[in-house]
Image 1 (cartoon, rainbow, N blue to C red):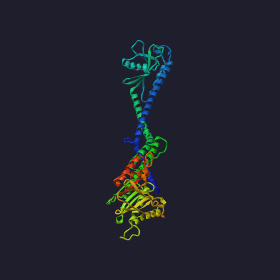
Image 2 (cartoon, rainbow, N blue to C red):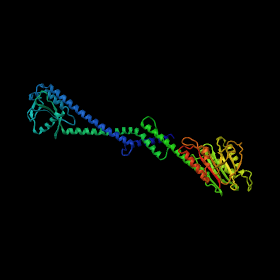
Image 3 (tube, rainbow, N blue to C red):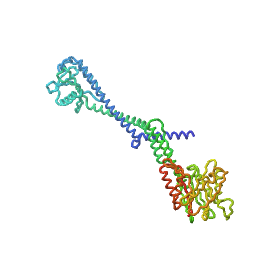
Image 4 (tube, helix red, strand yellow):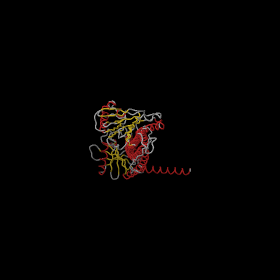
Length: 538
């Protein structure tokens, strides 16, 4: 096992080293780290070459200045150097100091170049012919004319010394350096000419160029390695962010990036993590909204799709939840012997919990109503027996779900369409109104407490006959408790005023109440569901 783990570790190390080497030398692939490295290398090479150029310029200046100081020092040691035009007057005489100067300057020769000639030149005042002074092995300062072919080079080199310091003249064979050695008290112009062989100088330059090339390659490699190191440190967090963003774009919201430190990248990483958490929360909300929408659709399926159409009767209902799901419900369903069950109810609380209990209350009332106790098969049933569904529903909820403290106010009526008789139980619900010709004739008040409070409850059954032309209207507290933008309550009195206005059908009545209610609410937030039902005997 240890050998296997060691082999795996070595394999990973080899892959990492290979990956780093490949990443280090692959300039052509687009990458932030590689771009940073290329910029680093370019900047480093610029600094390298500028530094090299500055060093060469400084070295040249140092060479020229030191050589000039040496020349002037040796001239000061020559016999008669303090006299005007001493070179002119001391010609053809021994000058040991100037001889030592020529030997010293000749010692500047190296393996690659040779100082071929050291001589003094003079352009006498008022003349155009140059005069050359040279010292032979006998240390005698000799004066000799200058050949015409050297005149142009002398003119060019000495002219530059006037404006730029030491002058340079290049011919086919040599490179000449001119030093102006004229004293303030001299009447003529005097120059020291140092001639270097051109071929030797070219070899020196080639050798130096080879050295510079090797130094450039070494600097390039060093800068690449340093650039890669710093670029990885700078670009790695950004590359991690880029890969993480790609994973988030593919839908993986569990991605997180390390966010240590207090620099801008760390701040960006923390903001990225916060953004992903926000997206995750939004995705959770979206999924929740999707589930709530499914729940809303399922809940609407609990409500009757089509209300029964009875001769001489007009039945209408309205339902509008404040949220995706509701605790309100209504139901109209047929029973045995041609009777019709009428239900309107409001489960306490709001949201998903009340919606679940709404389904439970609705299902229990229907099941128990369709199976009244003590009924023999084919035997007639007293309509009041259907209302035992309320007692059985209450007992089931109180017995099995009392820990949730969920209850519902409900009205359950059994209508005989032939006689207009209505047997009902009002379990703590809002009173239902009986309306006739613009007048509230009566109201069906509660006959017991809300469903689910306790098993000890006894509900009283009442009977009422709906006469031709009368209308029964029921509602939930979301109607009368609705508030305007000024926080004013709609109130039961406004509802009663609407009921006393003449209408033709039950649907017209509900539409009138709906229009007045939502016009009253306006842009104010809604906190409760609105449910209404109306039954009219024509």
